[in-house]
Length: 103
Ligand SMILES: [Zn+2]
Image (cartoon, rainbow, N blue to C red):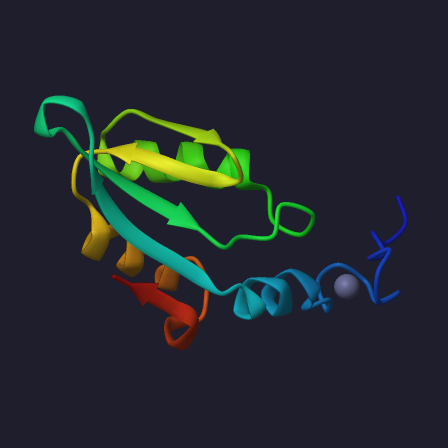
């Protein structure tokens, strides 16, 4: 078994910070929207789907907020109002606090 090498920077995976840099570069918008019958959804947008595994992120958010949700049209929708919780989770997972806009 050799070392796993990052295809982007050429460093061994345990030294590579590409994933961290990508996360810190994401400018994320979190907002809530009212849907039919006054249902609220939390919408997370602005993620770069070429760089971030949004499917994976969506399932982690759903599990952490214990709610249903979908990923479509390049944005994640979670059922219910979870703006603050989502922001805290994203920061805990390495996204940059300064680049998350909650509106
Ligand atoms: Zn790398």
